[in-house]
Length: 452
Image (cartoon, rainbow, N blue to C red; front, top):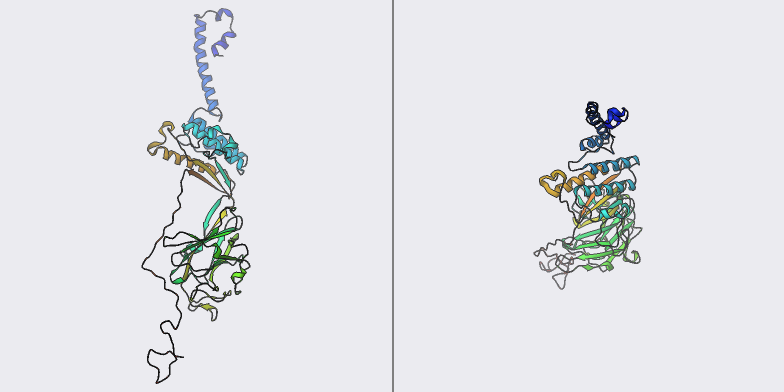
């Protein structure tokens, strides 16, 4: 009800009936000032309440009170929804997946409505629960919230030396994951047939994996998980890739694994685990590894293998640093070795937003600028990443992944050095003569006898 109507209700009828009376005109002028003051008071009251503020400037000031910074392209509904979701999540503790998934769903959906575009196809037609759950349609890619995400790790100790290891080389790798992890082993052969019967031993767990054969120079032996088993499965499959363009060969029948391995105790193929080779595990924490090469009957390994398994004190000789009878002469690089495993990252979560199809036709006020939609998508990712940094407990690692549509085609680089020929194995004597005789002073001719 206007101010004039309220005033006329309390006046005698003789003053209120005549529309053109001087009293009514006088009261109408006063009522206009009262209505304007009431409108200003209501506008000021609304500007001080988060749910009723209509101006971006007022809403921006209130968002700053809770540590939220507005982006230039955010509208009033989007900013209000984002701040409300963040505040509610913080009040709930901000440590559970429910608060984080609610924030992600509401924010992405609000950005789509504000920009008139599509970040996640079909998200507007699904509720919070369905947005994170895959259905039967192959084209639907849901939002993702992954606790303790997996990460592929390559051994840093070997990488620091380009994987080149001599006989008896020892190193330490660390598994920072939540539990033991099967290890994939890759061995690349060296020239001269030096990579014979390679055996990788985890001294911490007493597990070993080996190959009863010789990897020629450039050949790549990969002992990894066999297909069709769970991620933590240890059933191994060995593949030998040739550098000469030949197809890869399955050599699982020549791979073997050992359990209860101990230094100083020899082994044979009869000691291998039954049922086929099994991958060694990387225990949680520090793991001590060693490369050895043991001689096996029937495997060409002359001058490249050892007839006994070393004990703990034996090392490669170092001038003025080795003990007598506890060192061997340095033998050079025996193989190039790589260790890889998959860890479950503790105290971490990953948020995944699929970007298979992205349509951002416009931005309010031309906020995308010269960079276009790609710049705007980068700002959206920065906004969500910044909010996620505030929505987890202390010590928890959060990561945002914008997952685009990708097609993968496996490839491997091969280099063939045609002028290199590994020397064949030869004996130490009797190669060029059919009959060797011992030398006798004054009778044997020069070059026709050998010393005895």
